[in-house]
Length: 300
Image (cartoon, rainbow, N blue to C red; front, side, top):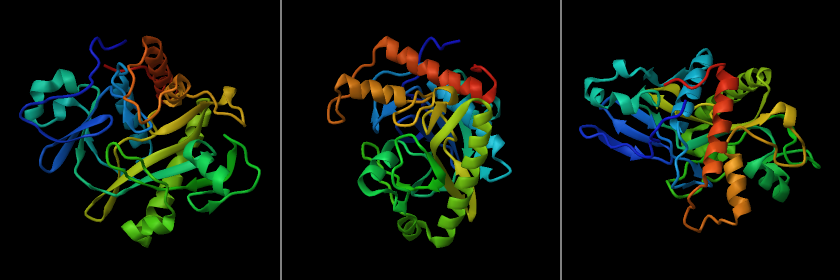
């Protein structure tokens, strides 16, 4: 099932727009937030002008699945994803919000992206080629692209403003931002979530190469926020097509990144309109990730 009208942006009069990220529109409801996952897609921190139909619903559905799955490891920020539970002021927009929205607790987000890498890919691979390390963590010599690491590593990054690029940092640098105790807590929880998620994904024929978590504080309580193990925040590789020494096939936006690189587009150029076949193929990959991981198709 495909939406007739992709949601590129939302405009909800009567609600206070707090921020518009690369994918999510966030509305302030006072002591809580409404997070709407649109169908926008970004690559290399640039929002493309062409939406991917149903992408926001897919991200929302995958995240909700994982928030519940990891609830024994860490609390999360979701109050409800059912439109009928949302505050009265949201009701006029029920159709637009259905399936792609979370009503969540308002937290103080930590100023870091919490990345866990189980395989050598992306910026981690580039770091390793230059320094033999990832985020200051020494790795064995001779590793190849996409190779499984001896053990998963916690590799945080800065949380850049829209239009800027995140930068990998060390745990020592993270500790200067959030404190040593909080850094240790977040590192331990991130690794536990990754390991539990990777084991589950492996049963579904997917290798979880790496992923990004975000956390927020509600008082002194640490909550998992934003999105969890989605095709936007993770590299999902089909296990039966996995190869070391190259960028493997994937159920995430690596396909889109590869298309852009091969097209000759540069980040300094205006973002290009995506061809219909690229839109369809990207959507297909996201849907397959949803179906494999959750065992369910797209819900309306």
